[in-house]
Amino acid sequence: MNKILTIAMNTYKESVRNKVFYIILLFAVGILLFSFALASLALGEDDRVIKNIGLLSINAFGLLIAMFIGVNLIYEELDKRTIYTIIASGVSRSEFIIGKFLGLFLTVVVNVAIMGFLLCLLIMVWPNSSITPSLILAMYLFLFEMMVVIAIALLFSSFSTPVLSAILTFMCWIIGHMSDDLWQWSRHLLESGSTTFAYFLRFLYFILPNLEIYNIKNQVTFREDIGSLGYVVLLYPLAAIAYSAILMWITTYSFAKRDFK
Amino acid sequence: MPILRIQNLTKDYNKGLFRKKFRALSDLSLSVEEGEIFGILGPNGAGKTTTIKILLQIIFPTAGTAWLLDKEIGDRSQIHKIGYMPENPYFYRFLTGMEFLKFYARLAGIPAEEIRKKAERLLDIVGLSFAAKTRIGEYSKGMVTRVGIAQALVTDPMLLLLDEPMSGLDPIGRREIRDLILELKEEKKTIFFCSHILADVEMLCDRIAILNKGVLVEQGTVREILAAQQSDYIVTLNELSPSLVSQLQPLAKKYEEIGGIHHFTVPSREEAQKITDLAKDAGAQLIEFRPERKTLEDYFVKEVGTRE
Image (cartoon, rainbow over all chains, first blue to last red; front, side, top):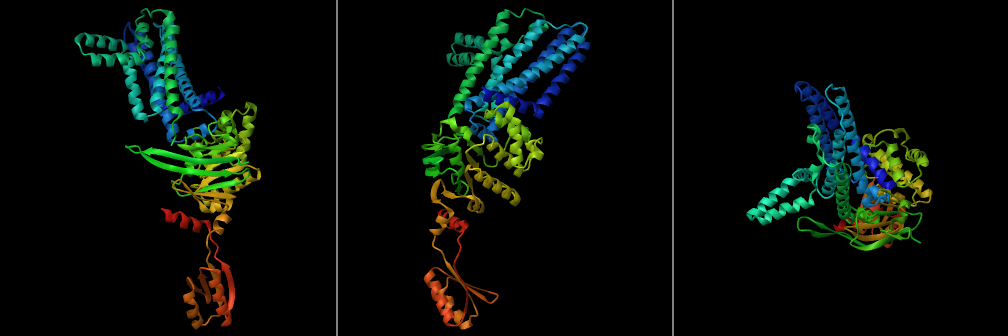
């Protein structure tokens, strides 16, 4: 466990010392402040504008960090051969992968915490707006969406280039948000007789995670019901942890007997 | 009991689009005794780095095996007694020298209260105390090599595997690393290093192995390897008449006259003696009679160069 935590802390240090992290954070803070300006123009809708743009920017920039640092993380270790001395220090390949995953997740948590804190500050100073439990829950769920995205990015990064990994991860993210549509689409195709493509869509539906369950932005913005609290607080996060664990297992398995040239 | 034993180690890679088999290391067997400096010598692509990477399980052998500190590779229970520095090391640029060594100390499970002291001592050993708070990204190549060696020493290992430790360094940097390796030998550490810099190997190693295209060409002490080579003899004479020079010249493989001193190179001791006797009979003065000193470079060029 000590080795995993050491790798995780080093990965976190590496991420937060990366200029990309600060550029993304700066942009995100800029957009949060911009939501302030937009809110003043949206008469009667100011609370919705601040919360919607705020949550959107936390989600989007958190994903950018998860995706772009994630796809480079393992590739760079292999490319720069920094992994050699780590393996020679007695760290197993699975400890290395898990440490990298936890380190990047910690980076994302810190990023969401900073931006979430800023958003709450903005809401507190805005006269017609208030912090609601669902707002905090929305940010809590983002973390688990990002956990899955990091696991996907690391899996691709362990065997392909950063550009290809980024494209594949982005595609998985898009499809993950269209999970319900995939099911409906495949149903229509089956009814019309196009079975091959319908089964392909069903296959995607079953192997890719439903990321839309981690998105309650609209419910928060329009003050709608967010559904069962048990699902939101416990079941959905547990599903993300289980899915990420499976991906991590596949990544470590593919890594276990690989030659690092 | 050897501290490192390699037995019939073979490594194949599949290269290119059609996964064509390429043998990087072929049936290598050798052993290294405790406390010695053992050098693996060979041109680029000889299989030196492949050997070290197999020993550390960075890559896996196609056939054969090895034992480090009496444990077969794959059994990682003794890994903390082994230090390693890769070729052209590229370490985490975002860490300072101190943070870098603390990171490896933590990985090695060194107690938290000892880590700082340990890192400071190692930086002192490799002469980098002044750069403890400087990021590795700002280090010169020589400094990176030195911090790499410090990293390899974090666990106070019995065996050090150094891959091209002097590569790319200027003469002063090379001298510093050479001195450091000799100091480590005095501390009874076993050093297994590979290099293609012949002078360094000749100067440092108790024993060497020469690899070429993945095949072991020779192993032994430098003296043993050179002694097995047939040596030319040099006869240096003074006060030779032009007629005597023309009489002796056909007997020599090579003849040179520098400042009135005549140098004859002949392939055997008997022929050297014949030239000496003839010169003495004619009243010439014998200055020197000696076998030509062969260097590792001569051997390397002859043995490895001709196999290209």
